[in-house]
Image 1 (cartoon, one colour):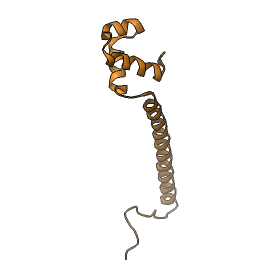
Image 2 (image 1 turned 180 degrees about the vertical axis):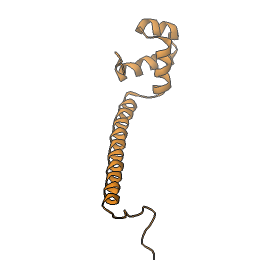
Image 3 (image 1 turned 90 degrees about the vertical axis):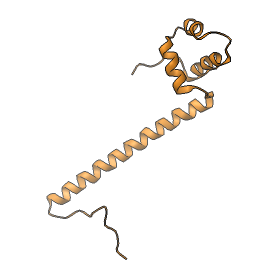
Image 4 (image 1 turned 90 degrees about the horizontal axis):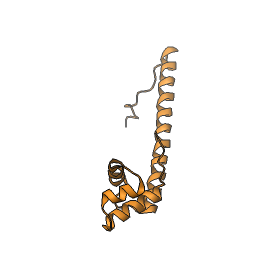
Amino acid sequence: MKKSKFTDDQIVRILQEAESGQTSQAELCRRHGISPNTFYVWKRKFAGMQTDDVRRLKELEAENAALKRIVANQALELEATGKLLRKNGFRPPSAGRGPSS
């Protein structure tokens, strides 16, 4: 994926400038060298956010990606363990069974 030449702070400032209504969107796009499509993508993703909010969003996205990798690795380990147990003639414990009281 192509890296933007604008930082998140710059994007937020451009969107805040657009929200102020001092210049038209076409003039804003022309001045900053972005296409109207890029502007709308930014607006959909960052509208109403402050710089701190954008930083927090990026941190949460990175944390979420790391957690997804951990869950995927655990699922692979469980599957491999189950296959190994079945291969050796053992019956793996059922996930639905619990201690019956």
